[in-house]
Image 1 (cartoon, rainbow, N blue to C red):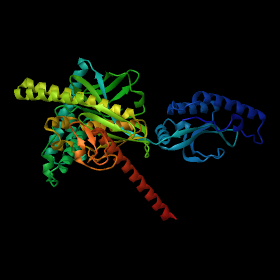
Image 2 (cartoon, helix red, strand yellow):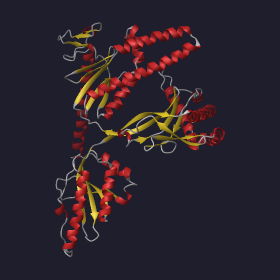
Image 3 (cartoon, helix red, strand yellow):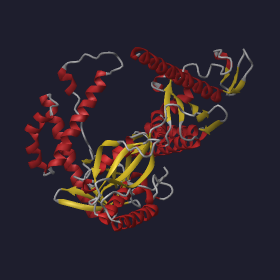
Image 4 (cartoon, rainbow, N blue to C red):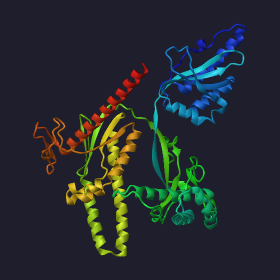
Length: 537
């Protein structure tokens, strides 16, 4: 974003009849000071410009000139003398109260926008353009993430949080039992029946009690939704059947509302959390909120205990650049066991090897089988420890692989991935020794990581049917299963003679599918546009 002066300071004043030269000289002197200040604040690149800078700028001009200064957003016009005022403008006096409105206006207006500071002069009847600069504004999209924050709690604070979690968990179980007996998910009816008894019994704050009720209602609705979409096709169920499966909570965690139940102080680096008899302040194990999260919207957090530590899982919503509908680069991405991800962008191929994943998964599988044969209490504890360790390791592998994939390509890139829905039911096509590795690799987790990381980079992700992507020749289009040699991981077309790595072939075909789908969508939009134009003539 670049700042451009519209008019020179001398041209910002037009002499009018009935006013002396002294007014004109004093007027221009004030404008020179404003221009000098504006150059200091706004000169050069505008990437550092934030709403607070704009607000300080307006407040400074208002105090300096003592006029009714306001921001007016106008549409850009090649004729700079012509101002087209927007319907909406924000007075400097109420700028702080309407900060979100101004921010949204700046974010969601696409194209080049002219922001103008207009001053009402007390001794002139005309408006004065104090400052004007061009700001390129692009459409923004919302991205939801979950930020995991470790809390540094001493023994006393940890015991206090444990008592809170125990009370909250018991409250959730009582609500679950009541819903299971009375067969209703109406929050009004539940509140009338259990709200005051729960508060008297457990001593929770009003907001926490409401959060527990909403938490259990959401759990029941999730169970009902799963029953409605059973794979056996039996969708019609009796009303009482829905409540036969009651959710039970062993460690529910505590749901906390932002700026009501919990808050964060950047000055002290501490979170303020509610407990049974007041509030406590707990230090967070981080160096403060990252810069990219400072303008994010914080949602309802969950306080959880894991492996002796306390964590806050905070959902945040970021504003990220909205990717273009016409990507510059289309990349096909094939997922597998030997190669975690193979990507092809039309010129180069990127391989991410997965041999370590296969061997380590096999090691965990053998160890798990040995412990299962023992069947002792210590073996079961060991099984849980191994399972947690394996999940953490696999999550880290997915993070590294998805980050490497997204960072390798720039903005305005479309990643075309396989739609691997139902991968767990496709084991009949995989060797018996490889089935555990395939179904245990969290493809869905990898997909989610690629989606949100690509969105932050201004990229799009498209999922297509992977059928025949490993059997189709990307050059001649012939489909033949015998062309692929799985043992040597080689593809040789019997029709045209083209040969390459079989994973690379799949990535090339995925890229072709993405390109064909994008082309068909563009053709459909053009057809609709022509149809609309013809009907308006």
